[in-house]
Length: 275
Ligand SMILES: Nc1ncnc2c1ncn2[C@@H]1O[C@H](COP(=O)(O)OP(=O)(O)OP(=O)(O)O)[C@@H](O)[C@H]1O
Ligand SMILES: [Mg+2]
Image (cartoon, rainbow, N blue to C red; front, side):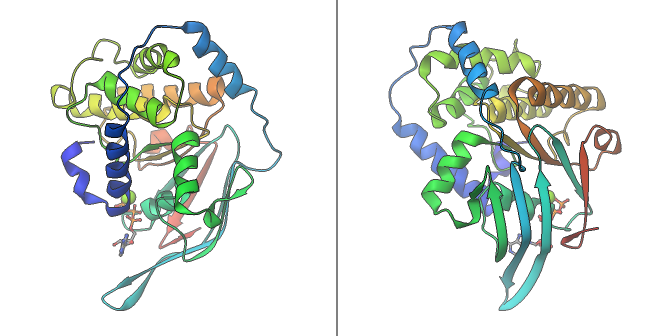
């Protein structure tokens, strides 16, 4: 994932820009002290969140139609899916089949033309922009190409930024940033800026950034695409680990058959529908 690819995806980039602007407005500088107990308390809080009997995310009859040159382009043609609590769900399908379009919808970056998306028993498809943004920042984590790293911030500061945006108490920032940087194997690269990191290392910072605020749902578009097989396996182990220890649910796309093996459920997309 490279920050200069940012212009690629409209909705994702617009959201990233908005976050950047708001982050700049949050002026108070980090007076962080390592309060390990606070991190432990946050973990307990997350693990003790009530788990409803239904799925975390429930998608019913989602259709997404774009208007291109005055003509309708039917990209998603009636998607039904569920992401159960603490499960790893994968989407596979050919290029252009609609996977990213669907992930954008699940993350509230785009809204369905028809259909319903329920998140944590709330009608996500009916929420206004502000409410969707709040849910997105607090309860979701994204690993999307356009969710780029801030080029002038170090890896550490990039991860810290997502804790700020999620309004995590300041005392938890330092221990949590260190914890997730070590989880992705970058404990020794924390103070490098993105251009001082390899492509795979940047990708791992993006992963650390996406999971730092303990989201309920992690959405990831080809999160291991730029990693070698050993590092991909390590990242999948991190994903399995946070499902267990932090109660997160994950929905991701991949083309890698060895990665598909570790999914709890695989949805196969063909031309805007699951088969
Ligand atoms: N904003 C948009 N306006 C018009 N068409 C769009 C838009 N976004 C996506 N599409 C079209 O929808 C189709 C599905 O795109 P999408 O990015 O979801 O595919 P994908 O399955 O993620 O493919 P890949 O594996 O290559 O990432 C493509 O044909 C694309 O051109
Ligand atoms: Mg895609």
